[in-house]
Image: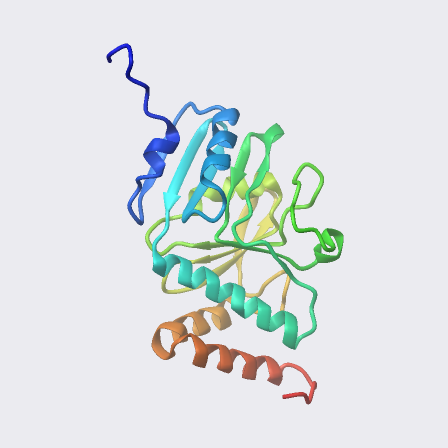
Length: 225
């Protein structure tokens, strides 16, 4: 290397990643992780995770993002139709330096702890509770290796969609076990969410959202259209 040459930084590498690519850095420090978070931001089309020195960066595809946004729209419908206070924080970075772990879900929601979050627009996981639901869309990648990170961070529920089925996991004794219904929102089940995610590709977003809203109306006696 010539005296004037500069070493390639983490950001130099991840800023050029094509869609659906994963880069893993071993032996990374917490400071390097936080520096990269600051450089790429949370809305960059990248997801970062950190697990005791292993820093992983994943780039997203439009298909990946479309499923994540659709699940957020379903939760908006639940919030409005069933009058449930749900706070959505997208791909907010959930991290705790003391545990040397951090992750960015594809979407996350506060349900039981929505009142505790109140009207906050920024989260501080040194004091704020973790989201009640974290969403992982595994169209081209596998998030199962991130489950121990979520467990260490205390996330009670994960929704994992692999392109074919959505599986709901509950945290039990530091590991995640599949369950048919949501812990945070028992009205929702793996089978129901899988059905509407399947209909999304067959019928389109608008018609599927209308069908989901019709289903929600059947769950309440609210007569309003």
